Every structure is written in C-alpha cells, then in structure tokens.
Image (tube, rainbow, N blue to C red; front, side, top):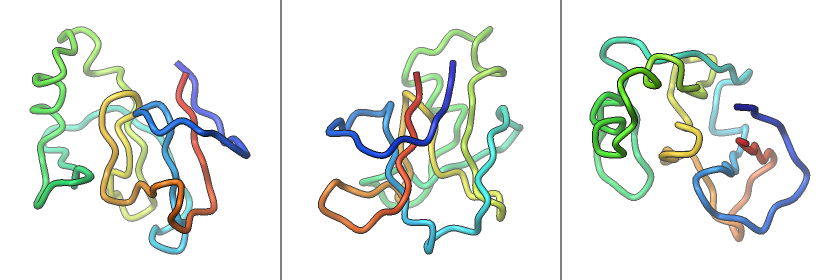
Length: 103
C-alpha cells in the first residue's frame, strides 16, 4: 500500500483524493486507526465512526489496524484511502492544490 502526490488524474474513485490545503492545517500525515476515530464523510451530514466504515465496507478484522488514515495537523481525518473521502475532498471542477493517490 502506497500513497503519493501526483500532478494529474482524471479518476474520481476512492483511490484519488483532491484537497485544498487552505482548508486544512498542514502538514498531512498517515497513521493507523485509534479507538473512537470519526470522519465527516463526503456527501453526508455529521460524522461516522471509522469502525463503522470498516464494518460496512467488509474490511477483515486483521486488516483494520494496519489500514492507512490520512489526517491534517489538527487531527481531522481527511481520507480513508480506497474506502471513503471526507468532506474536504474536492471535485475536479473545484479549487484544489494537491492530489494524492493510493495504490
């Protein structure tokens, strides 16, 4: 599993995340899940527990503790690579200045 910053992508799937760094407290970092982690999922109101996302996406228990979670410096979860994007993800026609790819 790798994360990298790329210059361009036509893709809009959960393996690509577009962010406007002015909306986040930089820098971004990656860690594993912690008890009680919550994320404001794109297209929904409120937040959702990371645990619930893993269950709904049928991620095996043995993979959940090693799944990457991308956060900003204020500990806002901005992306669950390959699974869910947060409200901070931008569409291709919106203003963003960083694209991250998960592969």
